[in-house]
Each structure stands twice: as C-alpha cells, then as structure tokens.
Image (tube, rainbow, N blue to C red; front, side, top):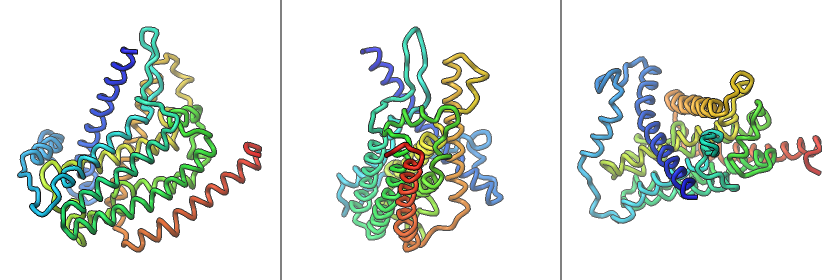
Length: 343
C-alpha cells in the first residue's frame, strides 16, 4: 500500500512537471508558429534559436511590480487566478498517459486515478474553472474586467452544454464513463472518431471555446475590453491566467486524443514489437505525438481565423452546436438499435 502511495505521488509530480514544461514551451511554439504564418522571425535572442525565451518571460513576470487595486476585493482578487490554475492542473490526473509498466513483478499504471466517473470528473472540474475567471473579473472592480468575465462565463456555460451532449453520444457507444476504459476499447484501430465523427467535430469546436482561444477569445479581446477579465492583473497573477490558458490547451488536446483518437493506442505496432514495457513507452510517445498535433491545430486556427462577434458566438453555440449534438445522440441511438446493441 505504501509503495503504491509513493508511486502515485511520484507520478503526480511527473505529470505536474510535464504539464508545466509543455505549457511553458507552448508559449514559445505559439510565437514561432505565428511568426512563420506572418513571415516573421519570432523569438531568437534569448539562447540558441530563442529557446530560453519562456524562461526570460517567467523571470520578467516574477520581477514585475505586484499591483492590487485599492478598490478591489483583495481576497477574491488573489483567489481568481489561483482557482484557474488549480482547476486546470487537476484535470491531468484522470488522463491515461499510457498502459501499465511491469517492473519487478509489479504492475504500475501510467494513469494517476482511473475513477469510474472520469468523464463526469472532467466536466465537473472544468465547470469550476469558470469561477476563477468570473471571480477575478468581478473582484477587480473594473467595468471592462467585469464585461470580460461575463462574456467568459456565458461562453463557457453555453459551450459546455454542446460538449456534454457530444460526450453523451460517445458514452452511449462505449458504455462507460471511465476514461481509461474508453482508451483501452480503442485498441486495434477502433478509434472513436470513426464511430462519432459529428460528435468529434462538436467536441473540438467546444474545446476551442472552453479554452477562450481565438476565434473564441472574446473574454479578453483587447480592441473592445482592454484586456478583458485580467485587465487589472499584473506580475505572476496575470502569469497564472495566461499560463492556465496554455495548460487548458494541453489538457484539451490530451482529452481529444484520448476520447476520439485512440489515446496511447497505435494500430499494428503490436505486430512488430512484443516487449510489453517498450510497447507501453511507445504508446505514451504516440499519445504525446497526437497531443502536439492538436496543440499545433489550436495555434494554427488562432492565427488564421478572425474573432467571432458576440452574437455569432452565441448563435453558433445555441442554434448550431446544441441542436447538432442532440441530432447526433438520436442518430447514435437509431444506429445502435438497428445493429441490435440496444433493444
């Protein structure tokens, strides 16, 4: 029991470290990709090819003057970015980063917690994340910050409905709420994207909206709201909000890869390699390859599509995605009934 606790503690620290590292270097990758798309150089001064730029940015954030407006609610002003950071870090615990390693006769899973309600846990934790933005915007006592927070909360709640309905169709076909089991069921090339293409499309659009990234970045749109919900934030409190966005992008990519693209499974690889631990490590490598592809997609879309207007954003969510998601559930039910999977 004690060895299991020690192992899980080490795994939590590793997942925590990898998440922060990838989020940190996503800021570098984003600027390089933006520079490529706009025919610029991007960061190239701090270290070879500018790879120390994220470290320089972090130091800059730490050394900036900490300002808390006198008219703000100080407790809630500090709580807002802390809550955003905490909730996005909590979601990584239920993602299966690989199968189980076999060491010294023991079996060690690369998933911190395989809870049988993993999907409900994810939806619950991401729902709490909206409080971090709303509390921060309200506590600032700034009208632009409050408007940004209101936009963020209405946007996230609207698109969570579409995302939840898309997941219901996925749960109907897989018959489980466990993320580990959903990943395991996709072994042998039976990826859920084949059975749920419409559900995947709805899910990925909602994931873009949930991370508040362009073209869904209305909560922080500079041209209308100065900086949106984090207008009054400075130093590492602002850093927490910005960092949480990149962590959300990484976790969203991991969830998309796991739910619809086989997770750590890769077709045919078992035919060529038979050593179990090598297969597990290769599976983790394949999962991260899929995650990096979706992170690139997030960045590509951000620097390609223009921002929605607020009414367009709401129309897409309520009049487009939610009816489509309900239709997807109906189609899934009819197909399952016709194929004899339900009576």
